[in-house]
Structure formats: C-alpha cells, structure tokens
Image 1 (cartoon, rainbow, N blue to C red):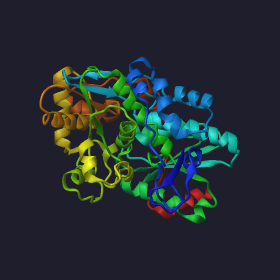
Image 2: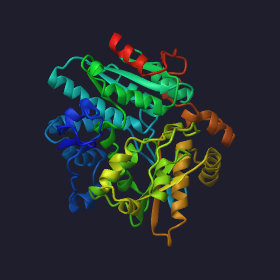
Image 3: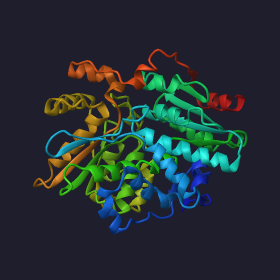
Image 4: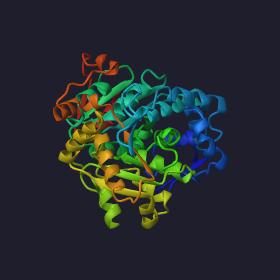
Length: 434
C-alpha cells in the first residue's frame, strides 16, 4: 500500500516510510491510495474470530509487504494484550471501555502499534536515533511515553499545555525519564500542535534531527484505532439490531479510523461525532461551513481542539461531499454543565461511573437515538479514559471516592520531570542542542 500527501505536493511512500516521516514534506497528512474492501465471508465470520485475527485482517493490506506477516502478527498480539469490555447502561445503550491498557486510555492501542512498527523499521534500516515529537491535550502523551519507553534507537519529546491536563495525565507523561522528555508549554493544545507541525517543515531542524510524530496524524497511530470498531461489532449486545457508535472527538483520528472500517465494509449504520464546546465539526455538520476556532479549556480536556487535524482525512474519505458525510455522521456538542449532568444520569441509570469524555459521548448517542423511530438500534458510546484521570470532577459530581488503579498508584509519588518552553524557537533550540 502506498500513501500520498493530502496537500498533493509530495511523492507517494510506502507504509514504513510514512510512519517514520509522520508528516509529508509538504506538511500534508498521509492518506492510503485506496481503502480495501473486506469480503462478505469475513464480515459474516466476525463473531467467530479473535480480536487478534480481526485486527490482523483489518490492518494487513494497509501495511502491505513492509512488515513480514509473522512480525505483523506479533505486533498486533502485543498491541491488543488487554480487554475491551462492553458494559450495558440501558436496554439500547452500552459503553465500550477502551481504558484497560497500561495508561488507562484508548490511545494505548495506537501508541503500542506505532512503537512496534517503528522499532521494526529501526532494526531493518539501522538508521541513527529517531526523535518522536508529539503534542498532547491529555492522554496521547502518557500513552506514547509508555509505548516507547526504553525502545532502543528512539527518543520521545512530548509537548503539553501547562495547567490544562489532569494531575494523573501529567504524572504519566512527566515521570518516566530515560528516553522520554516532557516540554511544558505556555499555551493551548493547538499551540503545541502548531509547534510540532512547524518542526516537521523546518529544514534546518529536520536536516539535523530525524523526526516523526506520534499524534494521530501518523498513519500507524491513526489506522490502528480501527480495531475498536471491529471489536465493538463483534461483541455488541444485540447483534440483530443496527449498530450506532458515538465517538468523543478532539483531533478526530478515532472517528476517522471508524469511518475507514465502515468503508471497508464493517456494518455500522451511523456514527456520532460528540464534542465539548470546541464544536468546529458539529457546527460544520449543521451549517456546511468549516470554521476553525481557538480551543477553549473544558472538563473533557482531551477534546479541547479547535482545528482538528484529522478532519481533512474524513473529508477525503467522502471526496469532500458534505451530503454523503452527513448521511453517515451526525455531530453534537455539549457544555461542562451538561457533561456533569450526564455523569449523574449515567450513574443513576446503572451505577456506571463514566469519565467526562464518555459522558459527552453518551449524550451525543442519546440525543441521536431520540431522533430514531422504533427500537431496532443498538447504541454504543466509546469510554476512552478511566474516570480516575478526572477524579476531582467525577468525585465531586457523583459524591463518591474512586478507587485508585494500580497503574496510578505506582506513579503518584514519582517526581515531575519537565522543561518549560514558551514558543517554537525554544522548541527548536532544545532539539538542536540536545
């Protein structure tokens, strides 16, 4: 499989080269030359396949011959080595929990898959040390830090907005040391992301420091998120009903991966793009006008993105046809007060403790289902982070005390290791002087 730039001013590359580069030289996102269609026999046999078999079949064509089958199989098995339970909330709504990995966030899957692909690339190319440059609005940093921790030949530099990630999230990305460095940025996630993008097109920097990205702009991080949707379809509580999936959305890589799975033939009837008040995409789906805006801080901070990078990929999947997109995706946006009310409602329904992102996703699903006639639908919302990551909000809202998972207990007393920076010049100087 070859990949081309969505800015259409760079040469096509293979899978591993696209993973290693992260962003194309013309600053465009890489996109596959074609979306493979899965056989009808495979779709019908999904209930009988393991998670590993589903994921391997889904990703195989996108990787092509760049990674041998046996090694790719091993990568998939190491990536999906934890559970993805579906928990019923009501008779028509369930939660798909994606937070049972090492950093308690859905991004563990993409980070682990990408780390193993890059490790293989480093083995066969024997290139000099590669630097992973990543911006985070919350969970990406911790997942990438864990996924690449002590991986030979790779350094990780994480940019995060000062004061705009939770205490647990900050601990996860600032306490490892070794080959992981955290840069604390005076600004927003969009500022962090713009610095990362600027680094990739700065020839003075890229000629001296081999760089790639571990944000969902990277195809390995992005495409691996397809796996959730195959697992959701396989384990849905009501196989006889149409499946609707609501995705809490920030940079829109997760939803975009689901739409790739849909175009491959996975029978998901409709998707919901659920956001907080950073509602660029829901506003677009309502008006047809795409107007990026400066991000605003909310309780669901991983979705505090005003100009989502992956939305251009979604538009490409639908050949920029607004009306085709609207047939498959609906968008809803919610305030912090609505998010808190949803946390209470979910807990009242089933004693289920959601995190703020899951609560937003639940609201989008619930509002969409209210527009549907009949009851022949199964709704699943993605629960993307463990509620402990947002303990102050969840505990105060639900009037309870959360139990600490082992993944958190072992890092709480570790010292914070971070370097403050304020602008791109500071980032560039740090990378050149290391």
